[in-house]
Length: 330
Image (cartoon, rainbow, N blue to C red; front, side, top):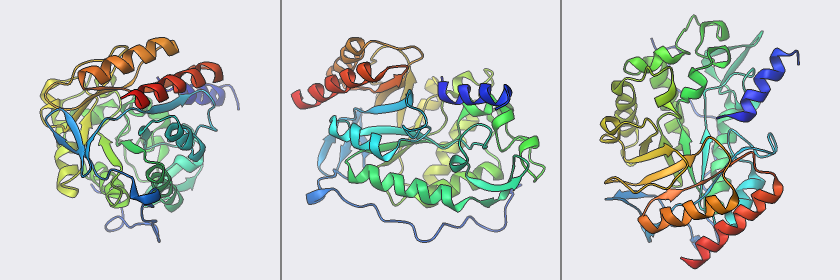
């Protein structure tokens, strides 16, 4: 469902143990989250039953995922500063970033988390500090606009495409070969633990961040084993006990270990004993259809976020108007 990335791959084809040296290190300095005026940001979320709760009370998440029109200006696979501003001005308080990991063949070079080793390959023992600094900066901007950010930790959509994955043997200089759907058939490895540790080190100071284990793990060659996602959930909780970690696996057996559930579907769905959100759908819905599902989700205590998909500027603006009206009327 990553249309922008698929387009880039097509354009390119047409011619356009623990690896690492010691423990992960952070780029210096990392910014502290900057608070909105009058410190109006609700603060960190926790889960009580089927609700998101902050220190200031219940939070109803409703937001925008910018993929796929206006790429790359929209900032995908993250969200640009200007689009964060747009989400906030439209009453939204949620968005979604995908961390990959990526190679420059799959995304723009600034979205590659590892050090460039030349010839299209990376060095998995070294970080690209600019990536991590940019991530911290973008999370700070989101917080200043009152927006929570869901970070996708290990994207199964990319694992389905080894040719653009840095953990695939052809794309790194370290002899590592974990960049395929076989990765999700067993518990996480030291390589993945190092990746997750770095993410948590950089982001745990932000009270506007929640985590999704893996985008579309249900679709990665149908190879997913429960132990992979559960081992990630447990590992992140050990690193960051207050973290909220969700699953997009489509499995109740994994959801039992997660703090919340994400789904890719066309319709609002009720919560299932814990918060439930739809953060993507595979084909374009009309602005009116999206409004209907957002309202239905709000009425039953879940969330249906706006996945822009192929919406042109007119449909985008219309849907944002609907979002604004939903938030203002509740």
